[in-house]
Structure formats: C-alpha cells, structure tokens
Length: 80
Image 1 (cartoon, rainbow, N blue to C red):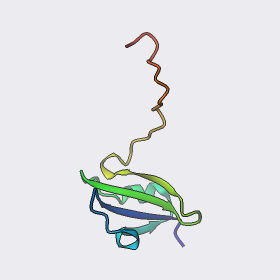
Image 2 (cartoon, rainbow, N blue to C red):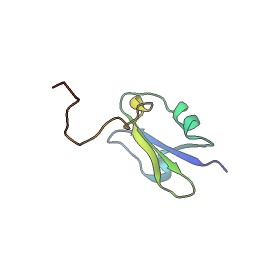
Image 3 (cartoon, rainbow, N blue to C red):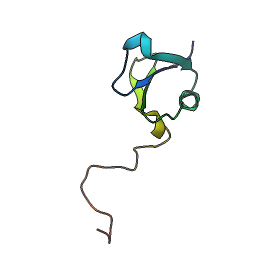
C-alpha cells in the first residue's frame, strides 16, 4: 500500500475528506510531481500510517521550502 495520500482542491472550494482525494504515492517527491501548479489549487499530503499532514500549501509553490524562514525578527548582518 502506498505511503502518501494526496488531497487537493481549489482555495475556498474544498469538498471535504475523500471528495478531495487525488491519489496515493510511494514517495513524497512522487506526490509533489503529480500536483498541477495551478494558481488557486491547495494541497495536503498525508502520511498513511500516522494520518498526519506531511506537507501542505498552494500547489504553485509546492517546491518551496520554509526551512530558511524564521520569525526571530532579526535582520541579516550588515543589512536593513
């Protein structure tokens, strides 16, 4: 059985639960590859074993990582 479940819908127009289900994939990368980068499409990728959301957001930005962002409020050294 595939590990990642993908749910997708247009922003503000979710149908709910299984009605938003797209497909299941073996890897997170494979799941992301199968999302169309449409402007108003939202997605959630869920781990089948834990039922926890692994990744979510607008499909247009599916390849962006939030790892470099922080809410510390400090500015970069030497810059404003």
